[in-house]
Image 1 (cartoon, rainbow, N blue to C red):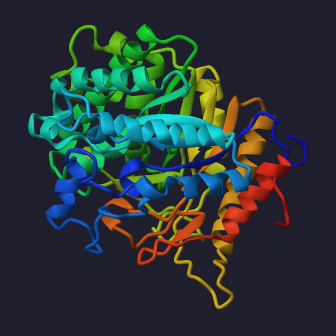
Image 2: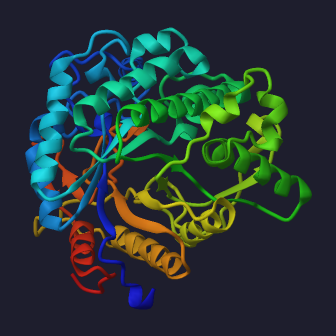
Length: 445
């Protein structure tokens, strides 16, 4: 794409997650979720909680105004399952639906396209108590939840994403216990959670499609190209195994209706006849979350005998993640080459840095600006080669509750003062605003 110019109908915007920004965890009939329980058990590194977070529940008009001022035309937000169905099933909480009613109307009034994600990790605690993503009992409740929300909002919300990053939920929530619900169930725990999220996703897609026409249905996957630390055969094999776990269970399940061959034996104990057809669905739009490549090596004693290798990188974010924009280009090309070039958009891409308010009252974050510029160049390069990429939504609009890291890690293009809740747009906000308005990557802003 010449001079990094993007199509006129390209989506520009930001993504957020309900639990990370809304606060108001006890407001208006909301029920408890797994992250409330995980936090109460003392698992957040800085000792903070999401009780207030960004107070988006009360300050959403201000946050929508920030997106409108930036010239954004799309916003992916998540809906909190425990606000809608406080116990995960049963009686619907009208106040929860009313909140998202107001939010959607505000987004539309600002001329922004609302893209709703149904599950961004806040599983209602009663469903977890009944087995959570380790069993099939959650599949029906998720489909019913999807049906309830779509019945209220689908007249105005046309873009529906079922899940966000099921691999992260499965691996870190059920496999190694670093995130909610905090289980250390190893390989089988990971694979069970992946498979049951796939099943729930397929059921929810069908539930919405059965009652509504003219919608854009999809999901959001965290995809990261996996490469071996070295050319040793054991490292090459380890990278292939991790690629199957991290990328292929979700991607091949949804787009091909297949269980990766490398994992078939490990998954045969809980994959039932008909499951592969149930998890496949002809989605309209695939959200891609990309942060870096994964460089892996063989190391026994870890799940699948795989561990992190040397990324051979000279740039790192505040999360100690490597900065590898070329991996986003490779990912988009691989979707074109291997999966029929599905319509997709970058649903998350961003970086945490230790930025602060300067003496001039502004937040200068040149590392984040460079991160966005380099990744947008990869998107433009892939689009120029025919990859069917429709948009770019940064992660995230606001500094927020960064899961097990608490309030310590800042991903936002808008700084949030957690004492006063004041919003301060950063230089990265101005860069993305100028780029969105110009339809091309700008040098000055």
